[in-house]
Image (cartoon, rainbow over all chains, first blue to last red; front, side, top):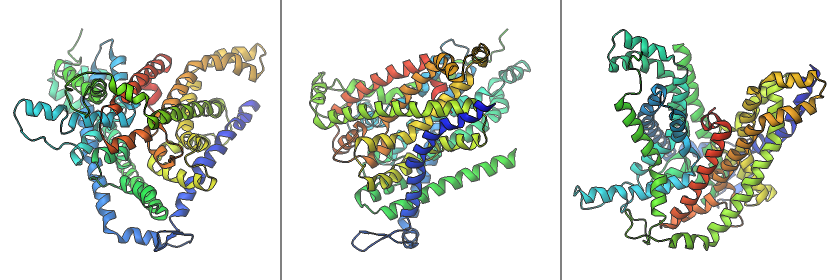
Length: 279
Length: 265
């Protein structure tokens, strides 16, 4: 089929555009990390490893890495715990509203992140919904600090990850055979046992994939740590932005961005190695 | 004959609670937007529309809104113009390297926007494109174009082949088959792609934070700056408007392509 071959020409404009706005900038990012920063903070064009050595000589980088990993593990796990029942419900329900509920579950993904963060500020702030309720029933007299710290960032990040987790789990459940649960039930297994011995093990690949996706998203999340952390939460993402925009130390910012990217690739490689061993 | 493998009451209630949790921020924002207080207090001590009035006379947010709408319209149009032909080729073509080109088109979706944003800042700077309309459009295309290609390739793949084959047997040349058969059949998918790439650009925050500046800042960037400085119900009023706009787009996409299918994979 000649026309099938000539169709390749249709991809050319898009390929050229992506080469200009994706390949070239990523090359520039790599190249920038080999430039140097002078004592005045001005950039010196070079081809040296000085910036990289500077990066790894700073113990703060490892603290940031640890902070990022901790935050991402906790919020991805929390997102999993909340999303799992909803995904299981969508798998089991025979309601004709199933489609609507599924759309509702992922609709928050479309709402601007800043809007949702502002919502959490109103819920968790000193004079917000939660503190008003706590003081209303007399549990505390002082407001409990729930934002501008790690608690607020973790809550906000968990909620922003949930739609992604739900999508991953629903896709995973979609590949399961409903009749397996029914078979277990008709053979007399009580509900909790049916879940522990049949449904849960079968859903584990989707759980692992969803968790990993959320972990990667959390590691590179910037807006939530920035706005709900109120300048008191330091992670790799906030540092990359500070270095690029506030300190304008582009070589170091580029090196840190690439370091984060490599870190994520290592996690992905570890995951695929583990899942291959299991298969 | 039911064996009792339905959703069960406990599971249904839990699922309902999770949905409420997911929607809590958006709902609270709607309520706060009608507050009469000068700070974000819940529950508000009184109700008014004053924050909506203030919003429409806030120069930074209004110019941000205008710029975001223009950028999103350009991004939506350009990503469709470049994305539909590419998606068609990837879905219907048979040429060496098809898989490689497909991977290339989808690759930007795998990178964190934080890294892309910095890379774009470095690349746009020498050309003087930082904080300009063309610069912002180019930057947003990095995420919008792969998205449109992916969505439209799926759309073309799920079209019934036999109608196109019939048109071809009846002697229609390929370009005519495309214009008169394929494109009309793919129109709902194309509209959904247009709506989602518009939204993708309109909501894009991290990349915009890198390539915006005093000369030109999009709405999310102005919102981040505002929320960093103070928290009063004005952002809630703006947010309420955005949420309503998003719901309208979400319903349109759901009707045209199915929301779950459109944003998943």
